[in-house]
Length: 77
Image (cartoon, rainbow, N blue to C red; front, side, top):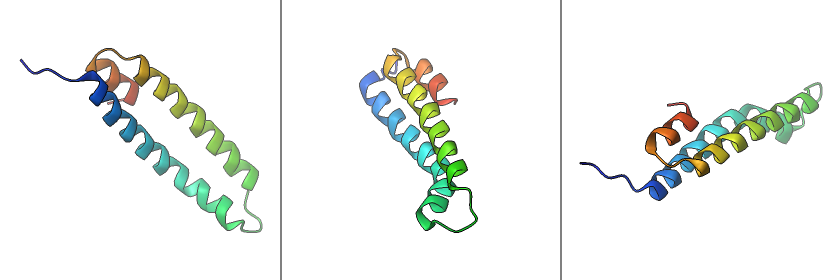
């Protein structure tokens, strides 16, 4: 029987969550960082906020998980 340390699994899941969030942030970060005239900085910031909210919910689900399957469900895998 394989035993999974749920606390370590949550750490791994949070690392995965952070990586996915950073990937989604990347195009919006570029727009904001470069401050390119004519780009929609407000739209980019709104998109970033939506991403923050999405991943905050995932973080809450991971923290509340008590089984590996619940962690996988939170991550959508």
